[in-house]
Image (cartoon, rainbow, N blue to C red):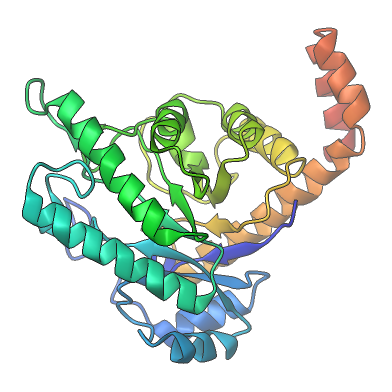
Amino acid sequence: MKFNLDCHLFCFGTFSERYVPTGYFDKVDVIKAFETIASTSVRGFMNTWKPGILPEDPEKNKRFLLEYGLVPSLVLIDNFGDRKYKHGAFSTSQKSMQKENMKLCKEGIDFAKALGVHSVLLWPAHDGMDYPFSVDYNASWKRMVENFIEIAEYAGDMKLAIEPKPQDPRQKMLVNSTGKAMMLINDIGRGNVGLALDVGHSFAAAENPAESCVVVDRHKKLFQVHLNDNYKNADPDMIFGTVNFWENLEFMYYLIQTDFDGWCSVDIIANRENREDSFRTCVRLIEKYYEMASKLVEKKDILQSNMEDYRFSKNVDLISNIIFR
């Protein structure tokens, strides 16, 4: 595995919410944000399409990032941040919105190719339902598959990563789990379509991220990894590694044994904490988890043997002696 860290500017946002719609902070200070990023081991930056702050011209965009020691890593298609997408971008029955989303995605793919990024992130954020009898599941799934096929064929050799999430902003999402996302990827049936595994989304879906990582990697569909944490009942994008210690360690242990060659994204929102301090803390914790997991991989044969013999206590003792010295 190549351990590459990237991030996005949402880490430094105002963090508005339903109770505090103006957010907990003033608008992002772009220079301060990039100076903070440059002070860490993060070396990639996830652009959005369309860029709200950075240059839309690919060459100018790359030159700006280079000033901070960064390269364009990924492109996120923003078809969720406008209320016009409230009925979904990929599954909607509104033909005008289908057409508008298709145009946005294809433009974003062109932008991604010009930047030379690893992959494009597609999140079906509003594709879902809030009430029973509000969505035709069969028709919605069919439209979603057909739209993704058209986007995938347009993308050519550009990788597309679909990101599952159980809920938020909809009460129930159509692509609500790793398994459902893999089923969608199978229905799409194109080699350039894979999955973005968001650790927090996996927790919120009552999954084990380590297991999800292994299952997706077995099919060579792990295209992106997003690092954050939560209490498994929502997705507040907390600092990675602060809540679910053992599960995050196990996730990192399995991740670094894969052939994953993409980017691990710092994907946090610390809405009441200092943004810059939270970002740096998150990066340091990710590095620590990688370091701990790497030490465990050195004892992989013993760990795997204990698993095969169902000797969990032996593994806990071994791991504790390695990382709690």
